[in-house]
Length: 77
Image 1 (spheres, rainbow, N blue to C red):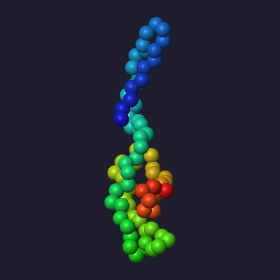
Image 2: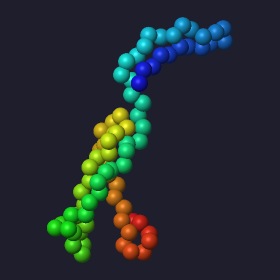
Image 3: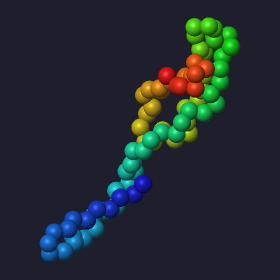
Image 4: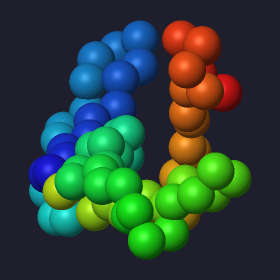
C-alpha cells in the first residue's frame, strides 16, 4: 500500500507529503486451510488435527490458533 499525508488547520490544507512505499495496514488473517483429522493420533481423549496457514496473514505473523470443538451437543467449546 502507498500512503500520502497532508495536514489541515483552520486556514487550509498543506501540500501533500512524499509518497511512502511499503506501508502495511494490519487486518485479520485468513482462516486456516485444509483442516484434516489425523486418525493415527485421534483417540477417545485426543483429537489429532493438521492444517495449513491461510494465504494472507493480515500483515503480521500468526502467533496462535484457537481451537473449538463440539462434543455432539451442538454447542462448541
